[in-house]
Image (tube, rainbow, N blue to C red; front, side, top):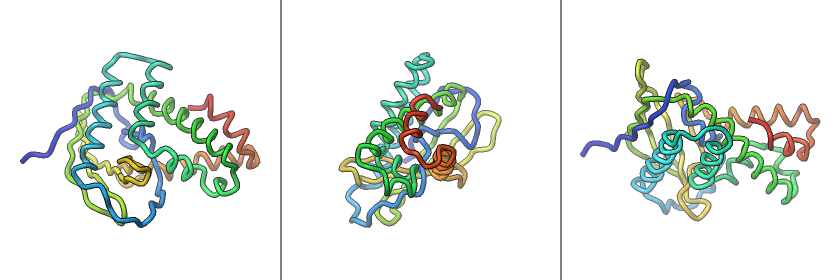
Length: 209
């Protein structure tokens, strides 16, 4: 049986930022070593739905804050936001209060949605083919191939777990580039410029992106 094909009505593509919704991107967050509950079929189905929703948002013709709000809803629906945010904040998350983590997670989610929502508007004619899924420790890694007009195909890996109680992706790797690792470096640099002040970082993330 042929593997499912995921069409995307997008415009130009930067190979390193495509599908940054995963939002984000999303780094080597460690998932506890519990037994696998989800299956490869469930993991693949999650990614199919996520990319289809992204495609629908782009095809809606919406722009600006309305489009970014759509991306934020998609990110919230399919991504393990808490794991992603904590990983992006890095070691500073250990000293953050519960209130600060809640505020940071909310601000980070909006930041990613604006940042990558702007990029997704520029993609056109991309097709994503799901190649399969394999178990890795306590999560599944879904392999997709992105086919773009006039460019060589490239690999996108989605890491999916049910740690949050439902199937979510917590990491995205494009051509070997770990997107959350990139975000973690960027957030770390932003925090350094604010002398480690998490509250200032949170305020600035509300308008960044």
